[in-house]
Length: 176
Ligand SMILES: [Zn+2]
Image (cartoon, rainbow, N blue to C red; front, side):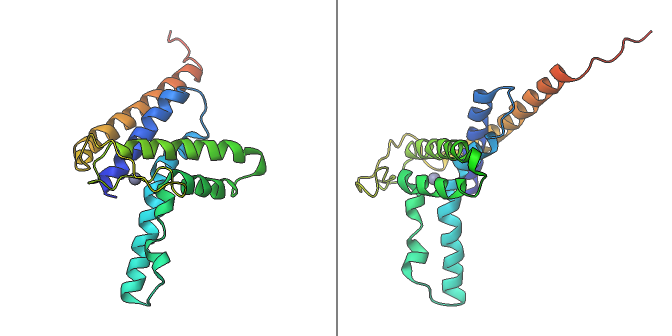
């Protein structure tokens, strides 16, 4: 997980999410974007933290160091999305789950287009350990696309908000 990867995932999530909801109120849009970031954050952040603790404070069992990878696979991600949805009010858990999980599936779709030198993603784990990878772009490509994508997503966000405000604000009284 490199920073450009996170920016690319966030920007693509925001752009597709905005294209989908357009000017309608979109309480689930942040969850869709968060879902597109979650597989990397849920696996890399705890692994890095556990690695630091293991190296500097106290020896940890291997499962805490290397056991996070299933959340970077569709089945484990579904369990994670379920667990997060349970933190929300009962009435909106279904929508929370679907928004998060749609973002997660988009994350995997983006990832399998990258080369991982044959490692790929075990999309069907724990039912199969076959790795999937389409491998059209190298992971360094995101360094070049991350910033333009982030700018584009920011502009799209600003433009849609500006149009939404413009369409609901009362007209200014005409000047004499
Ligand atoms: Zn990823």
